[in-house]
Amino acid sequence: MNLKNNRGQLVRWLKGYGFIEYEGRHVFVHRDSYLRGFAPEIGQIVAFDFGLAPDKSKAPMAVNVRVVKTAKSVADEIEIKHGLEALAAKSQGGA
Image (cartoon, rainbow, N blue to C red; front, side, top):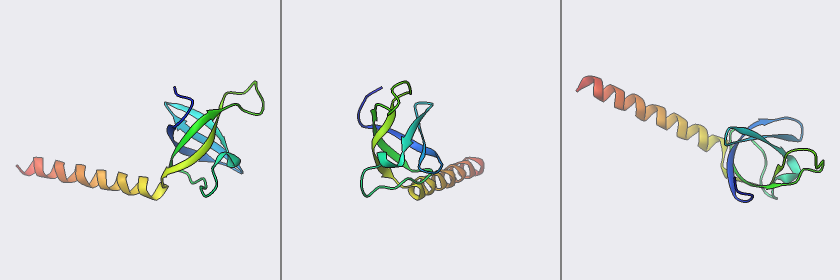
């Protein structure tokens, strides 16, 4: 695990905070951890650094969060992948 420039997916967002899925774990993120110009949206891929939580007894949290890929782009890529898989399966069945 690196302290800087990690990537994960925002999987849950509540009122002002949420969780990024990273290496099978959920990392806490606060809305103030997003850099200026970026906003949380479930499904987006984000880059982030690890930082200390205000309560030192808690696990490290995501800081300096920036959006790498929008939720729409992620959804579009999944749809394209499924379409390509269906096309491949169809061509294998017809060959």
